[in-house]
Length: 175
Image 1 (cartoon, rainbow, N blue to C red):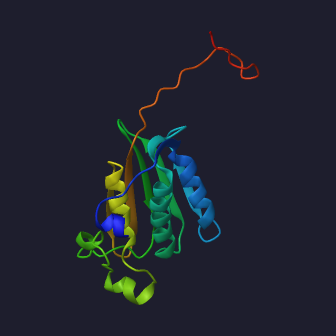
Image 2 (image 1 turned 90 degrees about the horizontal axis):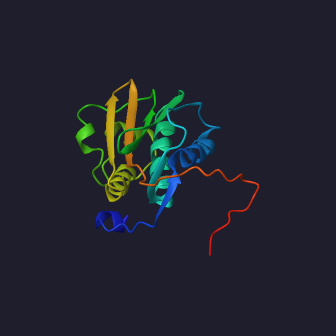
Image 3 (image 1 turned 120 degrees about the horizontal axis):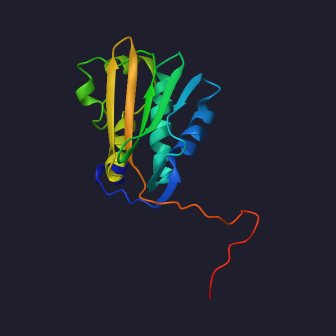
């Protein structure tokens, strides 16, 4: 929290498939809700701090589970320079008047104060993590109808090349 407050998150960057991380988070919540996963890309490679990305996805999925008793839709797709992850629930939603405040530190809706536990720092931290990754977060919601959180992670700038060498043979290098 202190690093997020001071905007000094230090990322341990690596390249990984965010869809694998997403599937792991969904498995942790799979006994509590039904998930519908829509993958529009075979891999979704990003460059970022895996532990922070897990934290972001855990917070967003956890909120969807907390504020909805129905199934949760998760979409993952590649855009020109980004990988987009959208999590949609069909729960209580967020009042229009509350939307401008949801990323404020320690802010919680009055409806949430009386019905669910939480500290009001989750979305504040998520936003700081997304900004540290040069990504973004957008929230669309209607009270009584549900919420969609859209995360955009910059795609990794890696290139994979195919090899004609069968995988069963070791690669040989010229000396």
